Length: 51
Image 1 (cartoon, rainbow, N blue to C red):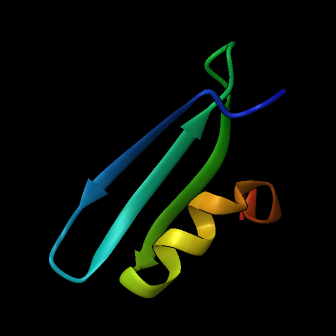
Image 2: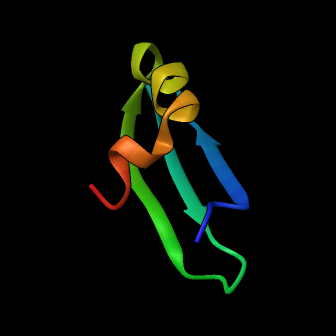
């Protein structure tokens, strides 16, 4: 299934990213994403699913 909702928790130095599918199952969990990793992660989330 595809990721349909992405939540981003901004902090000073890192972001926490959480993406879920239509059923609410976690498909993307990244508790520490730096600013320079944010755009590449969101443009190609399938490469980082559940890592």
